[in-house]
Image (tube, rainbow, N blue to C red):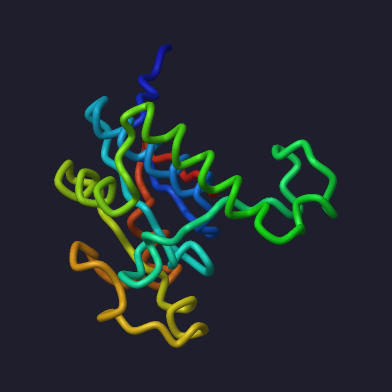
Length: 159
């Protein structure tokens, strides 16, 4: 007996708003939509910075404790290293014609991707819904998120 195990929905959890994590999440969500797959992003803890109006244009690359940087931790912690790494990554992103974070969010929401903020994290960091982007679909508890993730063909990815 064969069963159909097609992916029907991607539920992405973004917990850190470093430039590399945000773009990985957004590209996965966008790729799902391009394939006709539903996608939703649940922004929690520091991932909330990616949807805060005052912070989303100022995201950066973490150089300390990031093994993908292939540099000693001490070097990554030198003044200006994070800015240099961020500038280099933004340049590469731009050359690939990938939109900046704010524009990418608009593309995602226009394509039908649902954008959710985590209630617990908002309470923990004293973030108000008015601090977040206009295209926010709402604020969810973890239980609400799990309820939305139910159903055959749903995949959850933590970034």
